[in-house]
Image (cartoon, rainbow, N blue to C red; front, side, top):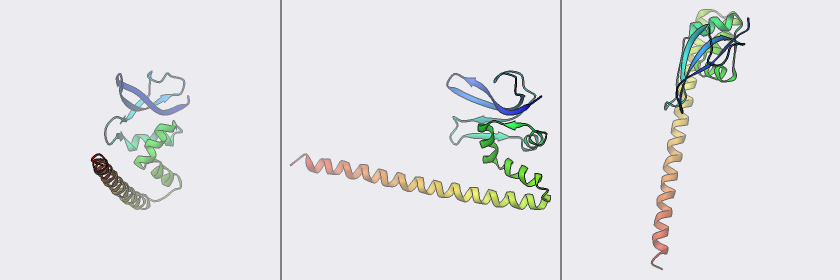
Length: 141
């Protein structure tokens, strides 16, 4: 039996919430599954991802293949990095330090993105105000 880690759609119309599940690859998208290992809400701001790390690592270790979307979710939570380190035979201390470094880099990256977004927002607001004042100058002429 080929096992896949994939998304199972739930929620109302136009308000999707997904369960991350381990399922037989032959079963339908919203059909029978072996185990639910997490939740994913793409509509939340910021999007909500909650995955049971130990169960995801278990399923990956026994050969489950994640779909593209689930693979990106696992990557965003650092689970694929941890799996690769364990697969190479790294010691638990090495894995812990690597995960701490990864978390620090991810936080720094998100702070840079937030600062960049804020700067872009300020410049676009200033441009809109400048355009409005130029229009007022042109009208009396």
